[in-house]
Amino acid sequence: MSNLRFWLRRVSPILALVLLAALVPIAGVSAQEQARVRIVHASPDAPNVDIWVNGSVAVSNMAFMDATDYLALAAGDYQVQVTPAGGAAADAVIDATLTLEAGMDYTVAAVGQVADIEPLVLEDNNAAPAAGKAHIRVVHASPDAPNVDIAVAGGPILLSNLAFPTASDYLPVDAGSYDLEVRPTGTDTSALDIDGFMAQAGTVYTVMAVGLAGDGSLSVLALVDAMASTPDMPATGAGGTATGTSGSIAWLVVLAAIVALTLTTGGLTLARRTISR
Image (cartoon, rainbow, N blue to C red):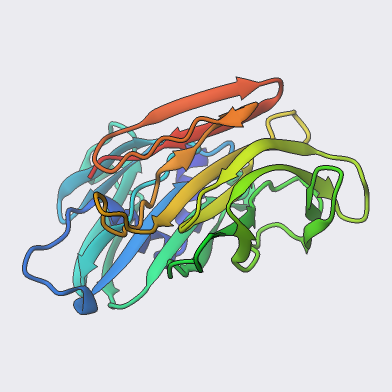
């Protein structure tokens, strides 16, 4: 309990803001009057928590590598409380009134280990890629890993010298399948292989390196942020929808369900997790 209290007290009000992401959209409020937020639990040793909004549990038992979907929230004030999983509102170790402003998409990740956990606040650009392109953003969320380069296996470096806890810009790439490597900056040695990453045309991805390099739990959490419209499917921000790989990506799109899929190949674990609204 003392570790949980320490962790939660260090989380800033900005992180508490995105814990609202389990709220259902508010009917009758235009998109121009809303913000969209999601939260990612990327702290490898932090405990599970419940999130309370205006006196009711909104997210239960949120665990490491869980990610909420984007939810549209009306601008205004909300009471947010955070308790140990299964606790009561009276047990809240965070109790804040938060004022929300409209207009942006955000991802906020709890990163670092419990001793020095912090919120990583990202502004998401879910604009549609050009024809035949996908957009990929990489987030370094492994607290004990050095600065890294992201490279095509046996090929060029795509992103260089990415430090913890930061994110790259969105990188436009041709649609297709890629074998990628996460390398300590300036080396040719892969610390993490991402084999058969399928970049689908019109799709925006956030790919997070999570876990710990020192204990072999370094993993990838790949989130589908948005995808282009088709005749049968409107454009959407998929939020917490994650992709999983084992040799090649099994491409699944989940728009209205709870999905929990974990595939492990060697030491690499790729998780698909989303929290129901």
